[in-house]
Image (cartoon, rainbow, N blue to C red; front, side, top):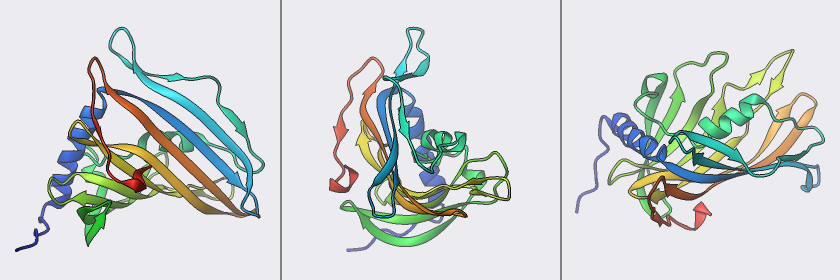
Amino acid sequence: MAALAQPANLAKLVAGREKAARDARAQYTYRQEVLVEEMDNKGGRAGFYKETRDIVFLANGERSEKMLGKPYHQFVRLRLTDEDFRDMREVQPFLFTTDELWLYETKFRGDEVADGIDCWVLQVRPRQTHQGQRLFDGMFWVDKRDHSVVKSEGVAVPQIFNRKEENLFPRFTTFREKVDGHWFPIHTHSDDVLPFSTGPLRTRTSIKYLNYRKFGAESTVTFAGPEAK
């Protein structure tokens, strides 16, 4: 028996599959549940933010977001910023498509099994970052059979750390499940300590993407493994 060889153009193959997944996901409704927790020095919860919204289609076919109830937030030290909410939409469920390929440099990091799937590990880092950008810096686990990303792990960049402002962002892991042939994000998890100048602060984040349904049709979800819950 022979092992699959890592393709020389792996990043391009991955980006092609990711573009197909992004285009397909744009045709689906789903529910997004967000929980951000601020932890105290003893490991308990000092405060939290919670929201639930549905990604839906309007009568004219336009895609939109519908908040369910009012968001709840009660923090002691933490404050969510515009960048945090942008990361929830763009970076934590990041799909590495051909449109973003030129922004990143990639490096092959070997082989690994993720959720029972034989994968290549691909490092993805921004070539450079500028003020106002939100980019992904981390790793992808790529299914060797079809070059689909089944898991990602990284951080949103740039961190904003200067005399006037401290806006720091945690490392996270996003798990995916197969929906009608494409791997969609289903859970983002983070548990990290942010090194603020006023003292370190531990935060935990959980973002769930639930009930994927193709607009005007039924969809089938294939469970990927116990880690994805």
